[in-house]
Length: 361
Image (tube, rainbow, N blue to C red; front, side, top):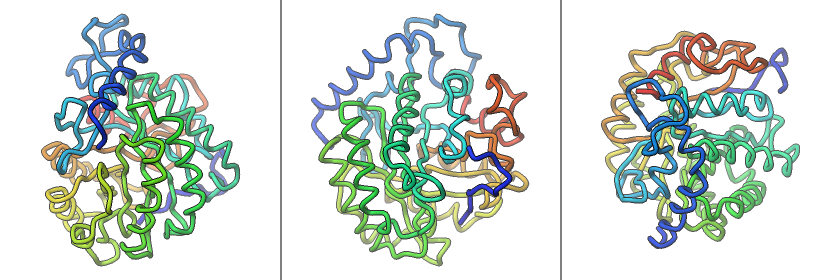
């Protein structure tokens, strides 16, 4: 659906309620100091100066352990919620954009609920240094948690498009990540970014081998399953959501992912998201306001139609991407990540200004 590698000229840069309650308590106690510094979630006014009101709560402290309830994502009280936030670019290229300062801005200035941490498998990513990229992913997940945000652990397989090609690597990665976060309520596991050129049955088989690896270490966390044709429920390869509806993954507490790029993906994709989310739990882990390459002119009108649908149906989303890549889909102006100023709109491209406003409000 879209290519997000970098040209050579770019920088090289559910389980029992008792467990839910225990994880919620851990989150609240671990985030006590951070909570005192954060503004209320989704507040309409500007963030209050630190220290904030004692009643202020971060998204993680307020919602605790998440679980799938019907076709929605619910918090530890069983209330349907929607997380809104950003996805990193590939951390092999843009680790310098994921800093304490940038994440402070994301949590406090943008008021995001969630950070998607994208670990590419190929393209200079995980396969070149499994231990190093596992440690890097954990560093960024920890940083999100320290600021009261959830973290989506994204296994960013892109090429080859068959997730089974990296089955052994995926098992190793997710075993390590699930062991690390087994007692933490703030993670969701995205096990295959964008399968392509492969049948739904092959993707389903992969999921049914990876999910038990995660569950053995972390039985409570929500798992996000990529869908066919670059996570379009098959639309980009001439199919639709019926193949998933009629043959769902044999596991509980899971959601299915959907990706779109508004300037390229029009009525058929919007209608698919609408239909699919009536029957399946859906999390939009990636979208852009541009074309399917994450570049070109922004189509904010079409993007708003998607966001209105997702808000109405409480569909969570993360936008691509929180970097200063030269493409229009990167929210920061080129060169921002080499500096120290992350807040406000002066450092943002047009898409960054737009998406920050949607997250804040």
